[in-house]
Length: 236
Image (cartoon, one colour):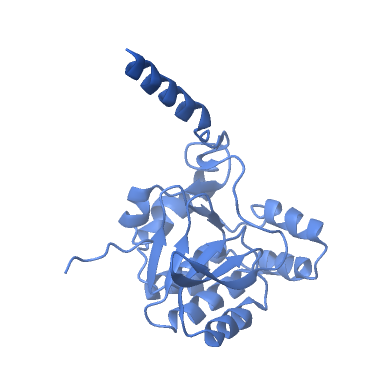
């Protein structure tokens, strides 16, 4: 009996100490209510060691200077194996170009760690990885690039008081990135299924958000595999 009471007490303490599951956004029920997409300043690219691996921590808003910063950071350390991403998005063309920079380094892995969110143009940076991994609890959050659909990104960038605001608004006004031929071509070149556009991303525009009234959708672990966002590694 004493042993049983001790076991029950330990179980109760573990239950009390367990981290509560993050609340989902009622307008975008597949996504967290408060996404951890990093800073609202221009993306920093910081070398670090995680789990014995040399990685780059890429965090913040994607701006026009990111492709050059990303290349410089990779070139500066030939031990870099992975790029970890969290971002609310930003400059669409810079996202595409940064993805192409990453793809130019064979074998580079891009990762969305558990709890982190990669949204909007960050999707294209992530898809640049020769290998890609979305950890369980990590969020590959997609969004239609409509003229009004980026208001949340604009407001965050305006609040940051950076020059990137003008560039960001200009990009949004010039194109609907996921519908543009250059982005469709990008997905094909990166080996991502075009069905991601028709079955998920285009649905965000048509329905105002699958399963909700918003314009964000976070892919499940099954979906990141189905659409080859996270390629299934072959055995042997």
